[in-house]
Length: 369
Image (cartoon, rainbow, N blue to C red):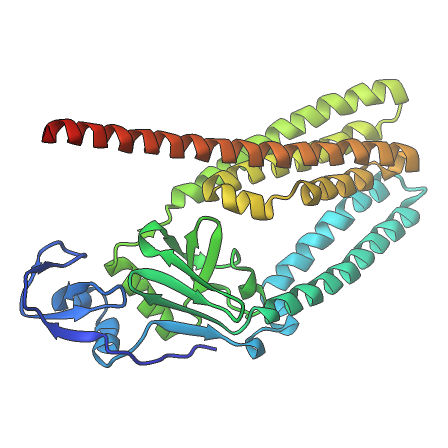
């Protein structure tokens, strides 16, 4: 999967003073030039990673290529697919298992409906994965490298550059780069820029080189606080949704005399509360471009509609459709509000930065006068 190419990076003799980007001390004598075209102290590079120092001095290039043959559905099911199937089974079957336990008379019918939903969902999911795999293969081979202080992503249809100074990176799960679902890679380095997620480190050796380079270059590392923030907001949303569902369920039960409504609404409220809070927390962390690309009102509305119909199917087709429709509209509103709020917040931030720069320029011009 990983291809390593050679370049002229390595030791150079400095003719004028320079400062190491890592330690900020003057670099004297023999120095090391990395792929961002900056010179570093030999000691700094050796201290951070002796392997990287040897790799650079031997003319190595920080470059990885994912070929079409590197991705397959088999690798997907060996990796993230196992968790996806398990979660899908719980989502599809749990409501019907609970209903079967509470309604002994129709238990077999409830279980049959649940199995039908799961099997149908599995077939549709498999077809979707085949289409997604074909879509990814059209964008391969994909080469990721560093050139002149920029992360360079080369694909057959385009070439994208991301300034390293504007990127963030983290080590761990790399599922945000959709391509890695089909490579079987579970852990690595993910570099993020404005909602774009690029995975690196497809081999143990390249993982070390990427990590050491990003540390030396001072590329910002994504804080664990982001994950904690998403978790806390999601928990709060889940609790609020549960309480709202409890209230709505008891109100509906008063009019219908059906004791199952409180349970159904609690389950649905929990799902809606978690979905709303998680999407809000997640996409406020990654910006408007990520929200616009992935948080589609139709997709979230469809998910809310399906879960609404499934949860309320015990009451009959018409109540289930009404409940699902209301829940679907709620999903569309949630996605639209999250996207609009994130875009407005970033626009306001850009306006404030522009105003600050203009004020600084005015102050400088007054000083020059």
